Image 1: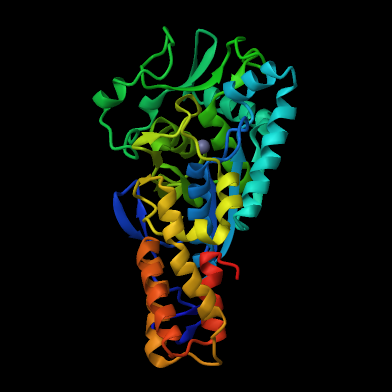
Image 2 (image 1 turned 60 degrees about the horizontal axis):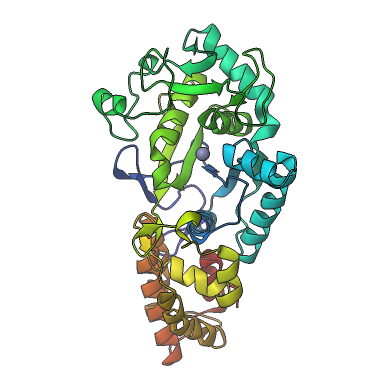
Amino acid sequence: MSNSIDGSVNDNEHVMIKIFNSFSSNKDKFEPFEKNMVKVFICGPTLYDYTHVGHARIFLTYDLLCRHLRERGYDTDVLVNMTDINQNVFNKAKDESKDYHVVARFYAQKFAEDLNILNIKSVNRFAYVSDYVEYMESHISQLLEQKIAYYANGNVYLDISKDRKYGMLSKQSRNQLQLHRLDIGPNKKSQEDIMLWNCSDDFGFSWKSKFGSGIPWWHMQDTTVALENFGANYDIHGGARELLYPHHEAHLAQYKMFSTSENPVKMWMHVGLVLSNGEKMSKSLGNVVWSKDLAQKYGQNLLRLYIFSTHYREDVNFDEKQIIERRQLLQKINITGTKTSKKTDSELSVLVEAFFAALDDDLNSPKALEIFENICSKVIAGSNIGYDDFQRICQVLGIVL
Ligand SMILES: [Zn+2]
């Protein structure tokens, strides 16, 4: 069931939601493959370190999206891949003289704790990519049999000349694609071909397969996890904007080979970066802000208000002062929570619907928060908001009073 703009309830029709789709570069009308179910894949953490504020922003964004979709009458099915087959994970394991599993499970536990502290409850499927290696092997074999993939120097590559639309997601021409130096493969048919299996023994950990020992390559890991969980298609693929190329472009090319659809993923939804003094956060620069430290210092309510104050597609220059500035709004929300009534005044009903309508429009959370602040000011000045309406707003924002 969904509430339409005029407040009437309609069993059949969903309110129109628009999402900026990186594939079309447009705000597209959102319609999931299945009428009431939205399947979301989010590129998950590489399990060798704690969650930083940039990761937290990604998961908070999709949490907001899923909460809003549920408010609008959809069910959500959210899958996060947990990357444990990765050089950084293996290096950490070697440094600590542990098996990579031990390292990966430790950081997976920390990731789960971070999501919990941030009240992120939307993710219902967590998949360790190492649990899917036999499926990766079978997918790669299938591509080899179909002559869509080939061997070069022991590695296996996807021949991207088989995909006429390759480059469309990241908006690159063939010439532009050839300029990237993806990996050093002297016998690759074409520079832009995507690695599926890396036969190198240098990683420290490897898997035996019919292609020889080695590791399934990053993009194929995600493709297999998504295929095994969601089948031939799903609705939204999410992650940081920096994953657009080569990761998402490669994933889409691979996915199409296993789907009958030209567009097996309806929406590509990318989140901007969290920068520190204009630079990317990285351990080597010493400017990383950990999500758990912020959550402990400010609480998840304040962090949500801070993150949602910027539209998800924009980059954010991290500034602790701006978190503190959000205290004023949180205080207003708290006061409003003590002043709810049985019914919402008609003037405020319009604003309540405008709040949700702002989120229908490509998750315009800054506008939604502005409207919510206006609602709170009016309630503090004597207008009435119903308990249910107030709770609906808090529920979508993930605010717990
Ligand atoms: Zn991914």
